[in-house]
Each structure stands twice: as C-alpha cells, then as structure tokens.
Amino acid sequence: MMVAKRPSLLLGSLLLLALTAACAPEPGSALSGEPAESTPELTGDTLRVEDAHAIQVPGGGTGAVYLRVVNPTDRDDLLEAVATPAAKVAEVHETVKEGSLVRMRAFPEGMPVPARSVVILEPEGKHVMLMALEKILEPGEEIELELRFREAGPLLVTVPVIDIGS
Image (cartoon, rainbow, N blue to C red; front, side):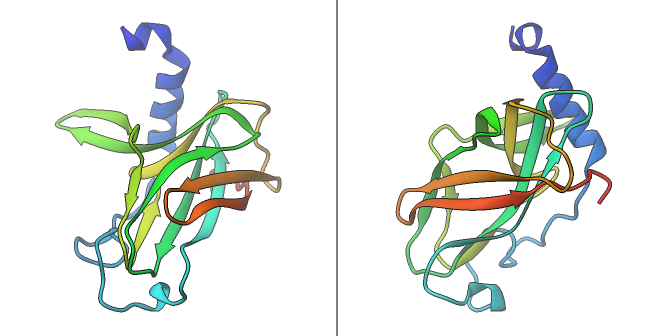
C-alpha cells in the first residue's frame, strides 16, 4: 500500500494543503487554462513562465513551486517534465478532491498547455511538487527549475523561495 511506504510524502502533501490556500479562477477565464480570445497576459509570440515562487513545507523534505505558464501562441504544448538540482524528485501534480478525500494526481503523460491560454499552478490546484529536497528551502534563496515543453523546448527559470506565510 502506497501510504505505508511513503508516510513522509503523505504528511508533506497534507501539510502543503493545510498551510496554503488560493482562489480558483473562474471557469472559462484565461486563467483557467482554457483558450481565451484576448487578454493582456496573452501578448508576445513565445511560451513563457511568470510569477514563479517556491515554498518549503514545514517539518519535511518537501516543497512546492507555483507559477503561471503563458502560451500566447497558436500551438498547443505539453509540459513533459520538470527538474531541479534542489530536489531528487520534481513532478507536476494536481490536488484532486473526491468527496471528503483529497489526493495528488501526477501527470505521467505531461500537463497540457493549450494554445492562447494561461495555466496557473497554485496551492490546492496544479503545482510542481519537490520531493526529497537536497536541503531545506530558506526564504530569500533561489532555486533553478527546468521545465521541458514538447513544442517550446526546455525553459530554465530562477525561482525565489518565499516564506509560507507570504
């Protein structure tokens, strides 16, 4: 059973959920990851990452990265993988609520990034989960994060670590 083998991952995930909160975008808005006609965020001609920040989950070797993937192009893309020297394992997850249960769902086939959309990675939603951290993430530090997209290719982002209370 997965819970018995990885109790620290479960505890870290539950702490991450308990200590962070965010407002979900309205369905059909550009921030929901659905195509939009025209918004200020959808300017430019290349896929980009904005507003990236990382947090350390208290009491464990787990962290998370939140960000916005902006795809102003006319081509759908796929975030195929993430990697960082700050953690042995980095994966894109989504928090899924099923009745009274909350679980993390990975994207083993990659996370879709539709054309002309903004995909938000935020608390209680999609996020980059950092597991088996190499060291504690201290507020004020920065980590490097590589996002590998099928169409756009690799994108290296410098991510500031913020205090979880920020």
